[in-house]
Length: 137
Length: 124
Picture 1 (tube, rainbow over the protein chains, first blue to last red):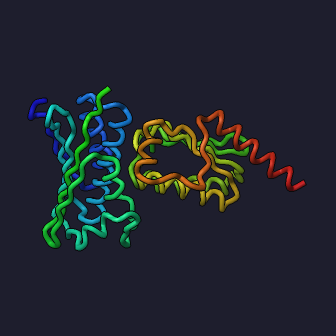
Picture 2 (tube, chains in turn yellow, blue):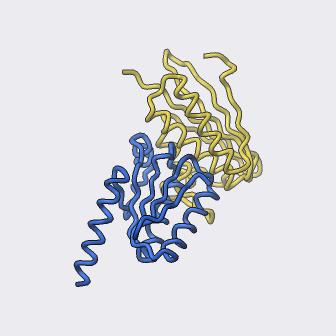
Picture 3 (tube, rainbow over the protein chains, first blue to last red):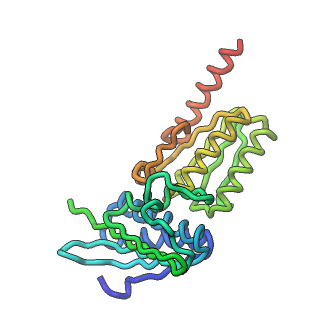
């Protein structure tokens, strides 16, 4: 899969959220993901884009194909330069929520994907990297 | 807005044609609750077969619609959840507890007819 399959979607409003998940679904479909798995990827993207809007107001989502150890997958990176998360572990706990009531966001996205990594620094921002591999058979 | 709301006798039938923004979802919540009162509706069918993604916000909105219309005296049923969307809702850890669902419009209508017959039977 060529480098030019990388896509960047700026997230600044709820219409960008729809665009981001459509792009994610298209990339997953192009890589041969099943309809169900492409939907799981699109839903995880939706949760991360929502997190960006709620906490940082703007940010971006990068989508790209990945090929590792003869596996194909999709990488989703959500980045913002927002306030950062003071307690990442607490934010990843089930049911954790703040005044904005987004309890399902991050743990929900993690359950939908195969790999999930979060880096956050207060005052600097948050970067979430998630991967999902195409299933064979 | 990509949602049509039809009045069909005692029922309201809302069909979502394509992906909605969050503000459109909130507008739909308000419209349905308001119209239940205006048309004195006893049942609401919400057809979500046009949605290719239902995330945590969407699931919460379906729950809100079911509960608020119930508080206004109408039974609600969500129909047309796509198979892949059903998997995503489960994996997200949301189960739509307390929300009535049916396979499609036909099953949704049958469900409401039964519920309302039961309710009328109790009143007699």
